[in-house]
Length: 339
Image (cartoon, rainbow, N blue to C red; front, side, top):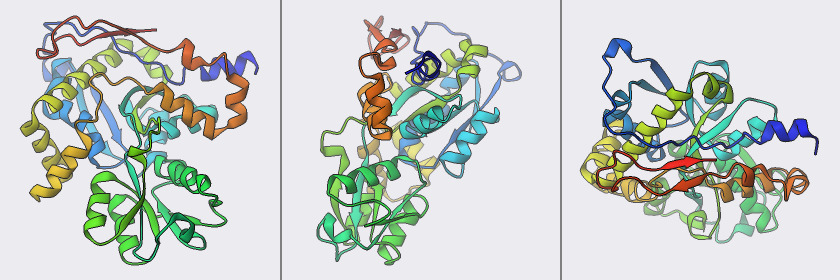
């Protein structure tokens, strides 16, 4: 593959973590830059960002962060590329698709580094082969649910789009309702929604989180040009994110309040499920899952992957974790990661 293509893709997944320093001064509100962060959807997978917001960690590092819910990954990506959003939550597959299309998109942190989905089907579907001739709902073409749905169907000998019709059906609540009402016969749901589906009598054919799949579900995206212009700001953003994750994982009551407030969940059982499925699995230090990216790249374009085997930017850009410089309990400094 030519050097121009390699130079374009080698920056797809840089990981910009730096040592977290003690004693960072708080800035007055008028001196804090306003940073807009696009959230692709309101789900428990966004709790790391929301914990950093509610915990005041962005303010600690001099940032006024405003999370905004976007209507899907394509809208969020367009807003980021236009400069309207400094950072967005985005699926690994979304970053890959954008970058291979020549767009300036990179992932700087991985917050959900596995596949948190289940293939949920109608009561009359007993095995995956029964889906032939039926409809399967996903959120958006090119997103995680779309990628995993196609991968799962192909693994069982079904041709997506031919044997099984794939439809854009909306977010998790809309997809669950569509299966329950018979508009579609299958969908991929994040685990807390899959739990609700099973309570309604639907059942799971594939639990992607338990099949040993290396996967980069979602993380924090930005542009290489933004990082070059605002490297210190990007560093401070990641510092705040890491401290928010530490607080979220170490303070259950705090995490539950974050979920309850932003997801508007009042039912204690649903709140517990949202916590149990999403908080403990967040990595302490949110590296991008390089094996998960390799899996996505391999399935996104087998030819592309084969051409770059052995000279993979994944190896050249792989970060090196330096020993933690402070006890995790205090978390004033978490780790140094460089490449």
